[in-house]
Amino acid sequence: MNFRQKILFKIMNFWPPFLGAGIHIDHISKDFLEIDVSLKLRFWNRNYVGTAYGGSLYSMSDPFYMLMLINLLGKGYIVWDKGATIRFKRPGTSKVYAQFRLTNEQLNAFKEELKGKNRIEPVLTVYIKDEEGEVIAEVDKVLYIKKKL
Image (cartoon, rainbow, N blue to C red):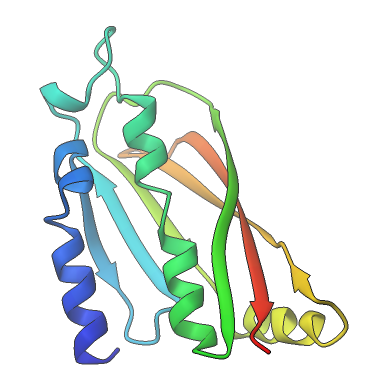
C-alpha cells in the first residue's frame, strides 16, 4: 500500500457519512486483498426499535469492493459500483462487522473474462455479522469492470 492509499483510508474514518453512521475501518491488508470494517451501535445509528439502522449497515458495505478493485487492477481498468441488494437476516443489537475479501485468483479470472468481453459485472457478497458471529445481513455488490482502451 503506498502512502496515498494509506492516507485515503485513514481519512475515510473521519469522512462525515462514515463518522456519522459510526462506521470504522479496522484493518486493511498491505496487499489490498482484505478490509475489515465495524459499526458500533450508538444512539444516533439506531432505528426506532433500537437496532442498527439499515442505512448504516448498507453504508458500511458500500465502497470497499470498488476501492479494492480500483487499487488491485490498476490504471488500465475502469471500476464502478453498479448496484447492490441487502437482505436483512436478524436485528443488529450489538457492534457489527464486515470482512471484504478478494483473492488473486478472482483478479486473474476478472482479467481473463475481460479478454473476451467489453465489460463484466461480477457480484461480490459481503456478510455483516454481530459480535457472536451471526449473520445479520447479506449484501450483494454488483460491480462494473471494463478495460480502458
